[in-house]
Length: 136
Image (tube, rainbow, N blue to C red; front, side, top):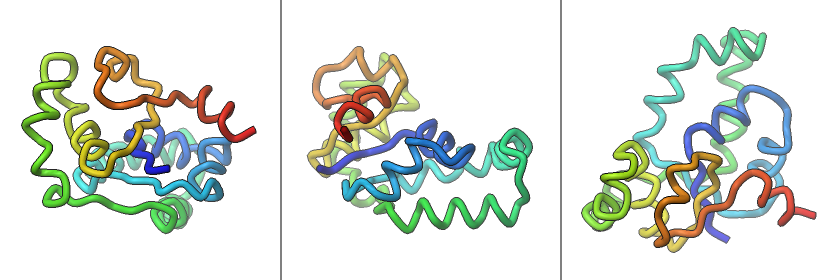
């Protein structure tokens, strides 16, 4: 299964050794993450390090671990779906357009606990609760 993860899922996996991290590392799913969203991760880097209680070196180690189990998607790979994605999510949450475009480009579901995604019906959304169910 192709699975786009949103930024909050990525950050959750960075914050603690959890089910979220376990799925990313061991599920066998093709995990997709938009390249553009790295800005968000690094925007909150200091806060993540502080809240998680580890060093910058550990942050880099964990980020690298997660990225080794993902396929980073460039804007070029999803740009043909940007307008359609804007039509789907633009009025709901413009910040989520990139995830919808990635999902459309790769015929993927989106793993997110963001309620905004539930307001559209073009892309299947899987919550963390649903991901736990699927992994049993």
